[in-house]
Amino acid sequence: MLRPICRTVLLSTLPLLAMPLAQAQEWPAAIQAVEARGAEIVERFDAPSGLQGYAARYNGQGVALYLTADGEHVLIGSLLNAQGEDLSRQPLEQLVYEPLGQERLAKLASSTWIADGSASAPRIVYMFSDPNCPYCNMFWKQARPWVEAGDVQVRHVMVGMLRQDSLAKAATLLSANDQQAALHAHESAGKASKLQALDEIPSAIEQQLNDNITLMAELGASATPAIFYLDESGQLLQQLGAPGPQVLKQIMGPRS
Image (cartoon, rainbow, N blue to C red; front, side):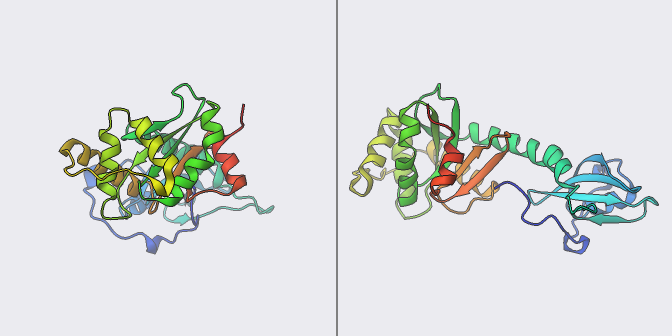
């Protein structure tokens, strides 16, 4: 799920990185001090009690910074009111997570994938898929009602990571004249699949598979299936592993 694991970050946990002064934006000096430790300052936002809020990214997560009225000190983390409401959540959602989700969605769209389902389906789900992954096959089966009804297209971003022949099997699927038919034959057969590993992987396909595994790591996924989908508010979320019934409905949306 593309939200902070922890919204409270101590300044001392941000490692010092050498950044040329010319790259620093025109933020107050105390904010620049956080930027110099590796945080990307996104934008300023209004905050109560004389504080100035700044939305930042750090290691792919949103971080709220609060500059004190004297401009000399920065508080990092969540700001709660007397009712216990997190005043940092909305600005981080708007300024960090929504744009970040759109960036990641665009990268998924431009990756190398095999479509499962109609191109006119109103809902698109991405999944990083290994040909030898039993849980990828489980999700493929779970998705059948939505895919076959034309409600969802699942885009399999192919990777090869589980077994020695995974990469070559993924290359076989990508080199097929009809990729969608090849994927369907492989997944519908399950353990009885006759998919053969490609003897020699063309350099172009090898590069596509390498790019996919790099993107997978960039998105914070370490296992397959890694499923990415938009929730009702349009936020990009991640599900690792085959989902349970309730999460499956969230991923796939309503059925026609």
